Length: 336
Image 1 (tube, rainbow, N blue to C red):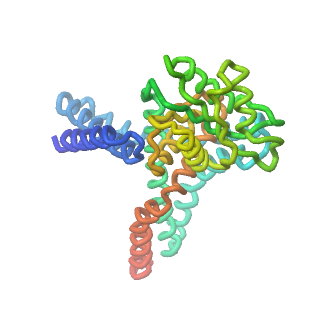
Image 2 (cartoon, helix red, strand yellow; image 1 turned 90 degrees about the horizontal axis):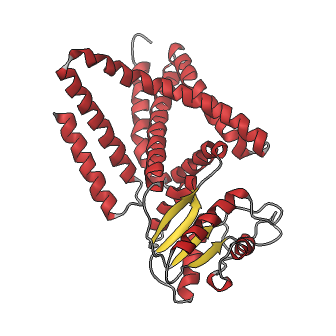
Image 3 (tube, rainbow, N blue to C red; image 1 turned 120 degrees about the vertical axis):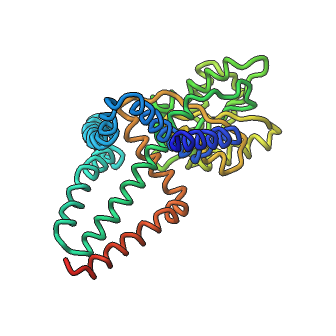
């Protein structure tokens, strides 16, 4: 009964927070916790109905553990695919690095504990706490990113901002083309007054022209009226994409709800940033090549953790304290 009550409580918190603003990462926390308690409540109900269902308790313990190693293997394989298709780079090697860390972390921690050294045992305990925290945070981020990307957006935006993502030889690559195509889909669907299209992106050191210029050419070639396309050609980050585009629209007297177009892996972080900047915008995602998604989601997760580094530091601080207490206790133990 308690698990059911807790499940309903967190479900209620999720709905209240979601109705207030869907662009909150805590929505994902409430959703995950509610799902966990409701699942446990269902399991308790089935066991009370028939003790035969007790084997599901083992499944709940084993499946997450097995899933971790399956996920690590998948990341290693995806890293190989990324290197083969994208060439050697930090982005390409990221899935392999994370996959290897997931495999090796339990082994190293186990060896530290077996060493009998209190300091190493304390480090192993700290590593366990931090890995558990990161694992839960990633599940929350990934789960809510999927949920948010499936939400409906405003059917009549005043403008559609398209986030830049880099050019190849001065031309729009497939990743960026997907964003622009999504913006055109929205542009063509809105009547009678079509929204302003804002391709946003400055010129990188390895680019022959601003991203916004190539993006505007693409939009006009695909049917957008030149007068409906307003370039933002200074931004170099997502924060700047949003801030500069909104300022540009304000200078032209364009107000009202906005839509931001990006790729599906980038939707949640763009939404979080728009909320932080107090911008009245929803974010929609365009399809991304499947092999690219795992690496992209990992990078987005790292960026979100960095954006919330103060909160993460506060939440992790007790873990350092507990690990220190474990180390001191072991040092004072007569067994050691």
